[in-house]
Image 1 (cartoon, rainbow, N blue to C red):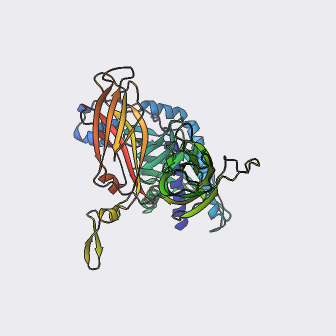
Image 2 (cartoon, rainbow, N blue to C red):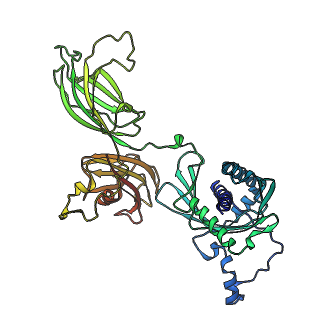
Image 3 (tube, helix red, strand yellow):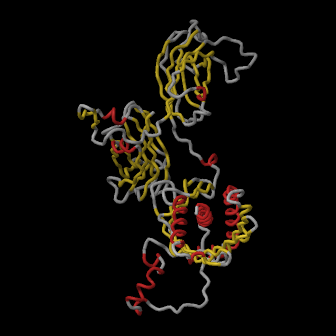
Length: 545
């Protein structure tokens, strides 16, 4: 019975793989089924109740449900492609099942397991309706209703001792409701990186199985066992939220690097710096930044007339790739007039840091990046820094503690502070994705302005657009979670030419950040105040290190 279950599981895997690959190649599915005789169409009002109940399960979803659309063009497309899809899917089934068969060769006196024939037949599946779901994420979700009454020719041969046993799959029928997700949407053709296929519920699968010419499904109780085994096998592979993911684009070419941690930098001191001023001294300060970032450099204070300055100043930098990014340190001599002279520079690769471990570096200052330049023999002094890399916690977006802020102890209930419940310092990321139906009275060149804790940041301006797409992200390094705080966003329009009234207010919204801290992330569309129909799409994330 164990081998039979495995064999049925292999058939289920083959069916499930063919289904997954079939749908996964995006919409390679279906055509008109072949019929022996053309049906006689009759209007629904001529049918009585019994006749309506008989045909109700066969009515396509695009007739019963307004959310589903009729896709005859797609069925015609799949019908034309079916001979080629049949060969491609069968080749994938062979390669996927060969390792499974190899595990049983040599066991139970089995000498070989192989396909004599493997074809999905001439009748392609048919889509009875297609639903397109809208989400706030960068993805496209499709939910087709798929039916397949196929005529596959699948014959499996089992060589057992000196016997040759043939197992044939006949009269295959499948009804299922898959969910196809194209994600993430990217500006590289075909504009999505992965196809994820899952099933919304267990599919209805019916088939016959012939062994040595006899229909074993006629054995009492075996039909129900086989049905249950196949459904369980398919459910374990593909029932949502599990999915079959088919990569379309190389992740390295479409990956957008996101913040993964915070680099804590303490600029301690410098020693024996070069003399750049006429009076034999310098006015040093330090600029620091991470490679690969376009953000302005951080700067220390200026220490006037000091060749051995002490700063002890702390900074925080956003890290996106600790394996490749480098901390760049540059020491300058401040001048009131003209360009500031660079006294020296150094680099610290972040890959040398151990997470959560503070490490001190005492570095010799160099003239430029080529540290092996034989002509650079001048001593430029040293700089001392302390570094600590703190990656974001995987569970930082989850609520720590109970929702009402109480924690259980042996002596009873003790009230905990919000800072204890929600963690300490972290990064607030604000993604302004776009807006809809924003329209000015005099001009329509919208841009968004973000106001938070005294800082003002703005997106680029989109000319002559009512539905602008910005997709710009802003980061705020905070010492404590922004509980009971709001972020203010305004949508403005600016005339490109000269005008006394060049700016126009198109709407605004205030977003409470308490939900962001509690849930870790929100991704919503907000109606704009002072706008008739305007909507802005904003995603905000809070992570702690």
